[in-house]
Length: 366
Image (cartoon, rainbow, N blue to C red; front, side):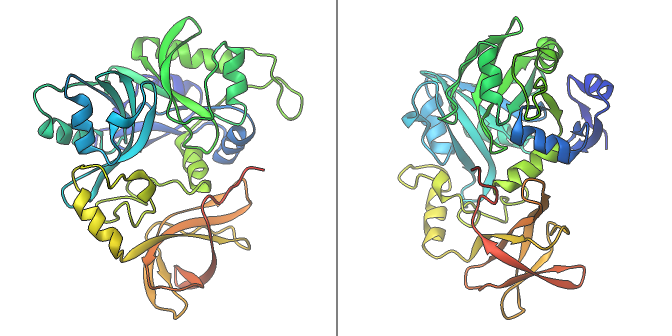
């Protein structure tokens, strides 16, 4: 199957990135190694190219009321310049995607969609949209970078960019390196940061500027703080340490938002598509998401491995698992029956390994 190339494909290859197919694109999975990049974000600043994701603008007189009917949180209640995490569901309450929308105008929203679902999401929205809503896709015209890290706010401040990182999902325009770009405050890694949308013709200049700009910042050893290019490999370990959902793993047509522990992203007082089905399911859920850890092991549970309850009966499956570089042991998320009881074990190639239950996030900053 032919994969698409992002605008900076050659640039990343020149940086010796390891490129892998992901969501229909060749994407950098790592540069210096997943653990090194992971730790760079936890202690300094990392930059990710996430241009495979889908950014779409909805505008027009009916844009906000339409979004209220499609997303699990009402866009009309979000202040200008702010956003929210929500879900896009079908009539059965099954999630087609999770997303973040930003209210960028009185009658305008910018929506960030997952890479693997962006084409089908856009088609679904267009199918249900009234005639007074227009769509502007950035799928082929723009690049998207994520600046993330414990020192991200210090780094951006030195560049003259002061964002309110205490409030997630803010949006606006800033100028760095002589380039104007739209930013979206986000934190999928569990650290402060933002995503930056820029036309493809300016993408390499901006990415290169972030990597090479000299600042007065020092790292933990006292050396000049450098921005580390990071791949999707550590993006996954970072998000999993925080217990964040990834569509296709913790959330899918077979795992609804209630089971995924995302009730907080659903406003049942809003009349969105799938609302009645989710309200009914919430009254008596059949499954739940649990967080598992094993402090004695470095062998991570993998997606779809069977989970057994205290009686040794199969009760669910792993959705995601990894070795946590920050914690030094393995963690995982699983969907299990609501009536199941700990202790849980994971069938790891025929070996039943006991895991301790805990709460999300696994990694808690001091």
